[in-house]
Length: 259
Image (cartoon, rainbow, N blue to C red):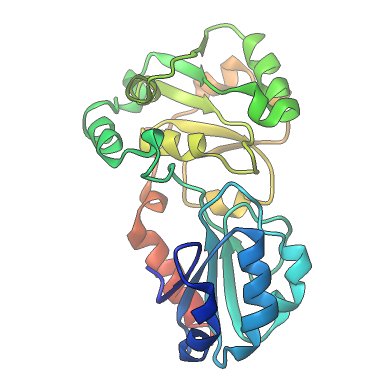
């Protein structure tokens, strides 16, 4: 999807040579490791001659864009698409953390495809109203509050299955999925839920613009929700285009046209 890729797999010694070849409106992918971003910004950015679209992704980390506001403000940046953005800016646009990297067991593409094809029930036929399955240790304060709220409600399914196949099958039978923040604001569970036709419930955050075209329930406080309210909602036609490359190709092309 990107015209140029700079991450841990590329030779950092060749970056400076490649920067002048970035063309007008090109998309540049940059890994989110802080040393890579610092090197890109401080050692090679000034060698780029034409305005371009920047994408940063491939870890849970928030890109410390507040340290690189001068990059965002540069006329050479048409748009910066970032996973887990750490602040707001008119040119800083959130993108999904998405599903886990395919190199991990919980990122196995074949398992996702099997579940997507066979384990997604129609919304009205799902028997689990609210599904809860996460480890508190990954974001102790935020997740503890979410879990405490959920366990105080009736008819909540608190699952602790570790099999990824069974977890996806349970998502495919759930209407709503509690999805508090992970290591960053975003987490894989939100996108696994959307993939399986469930509606993730998330806290209001800088990621809100990301969910404009997705079936996601955004709340200011977990305590504002009730079982009765969830039962009143109908998401039989929940969109999932945001999960697929075609949607993001268009977003990137639209950003490139701002030149």
